[in-house]
Image (tube, rainbow, N blue to C red; front, side, top):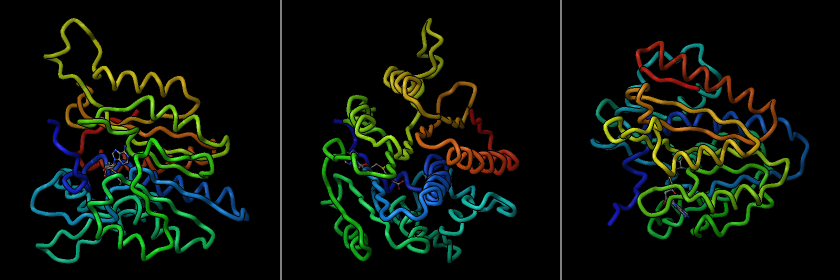
Length: 277
Ligand SMILES: C[S@@+](CC[C@H](N)C(=O)[O-])C[C@H]1O[C@@H](n2cnc3c(N)ncnc32)[C@H](O)[C@@H]1O
């Protein structure tokens, strides 16, 4: 049986690092664009935990564990905001990594009062402590299957990732349904893992991606939107990485692009070999 997904082992990994600063940029800029509007409905339909303690094991060591030591002077405003939200108070206590819900909530509550937040994770039944934490804020918490959630009223949707089905394989049909529900003026940010095929298993094919990853990338090509991808490890093998897919205004995307660029410069100036395209 496929191992059950547990975000606690993943929190703060390079993929998280790559998604959270652009998420802050996208929300902030979308809010700016809609200043004066009465309500703003934000949906995070794969929410996981508000925060995850960083323990002695976990993928964070290769992600935020390395990155937090970098010189963050002069970085993009949203990279800086995200970085300062992660505290490392004691030498032997790495602290917590904030999940998307809490990160967004902390940003938003400083800025707007008419913000409605919907968080959902079908694991929330098990995560009762997280639920309590969410409920301190005026936030709607659900534990439905993401595919059953109606996004037609959403102003901003964060999809992370496009549905996991047994063993974390993209569920394209659900993802397409979600896309079809969106209002024309909604902003969407989707994070997706890039699942590669190692060169030894490629056989005669030049395709670096697993079948379902290729299908997802094809789907995104057909959609009107923008995609950015980041590769790490051995970038030339296109083995490991993740991507962001964005739908929304050109102005917001441009601003998100500056945040992504700043992350790229910060990481590469400090010896992390990553490729962003
Ligand atoms: C990658 S984590 C989310 C991380 C979070 N957005 C963040 O940035 O901190 C994905 C979460 O989706 C949940 N999940 C997976 N498939 C789901 C589904 N079909 N419906 C609802 N939740 C689901 C898992 O329980 C997991 O906690």
